[in-house]
Length: 142
Image 1: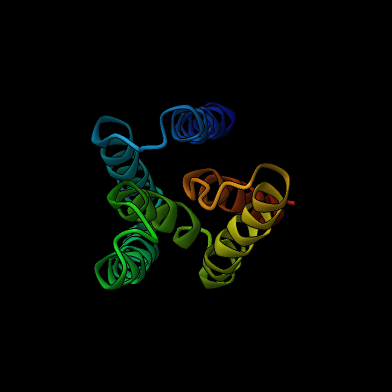
Image 2: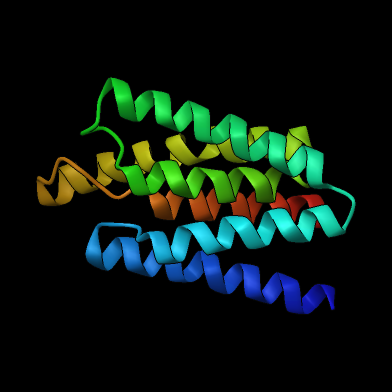
């Protein structure tokens, strides 16, 4: 059962990456159900409180950035933060912190490369959030 849940979570993260890379947006129909499913699964596994704490905290941080500078981060990233925060929070504060810190660093590194190569000034942040969450959870499972 754990492998099935892991595969479904990875499929969700991959779908988010593809959508954000191709459409430059993260739709509600993809972000919200994923966050709800992760919170429900974490609650059933006895990890509801850390998952909810992770979701609310990362959501609040991303919302603050979005409200201070809406062009820096889209609303889809803010909604994705709830799901990513829940996923990583369910595995502990250290996993949550790793993903929360790695995502903006990945985006910054990617933005520098894209700026140098193509002259574009923006990159989607969702793929970095998904990659950071998948990597942090994978490290926790080793």
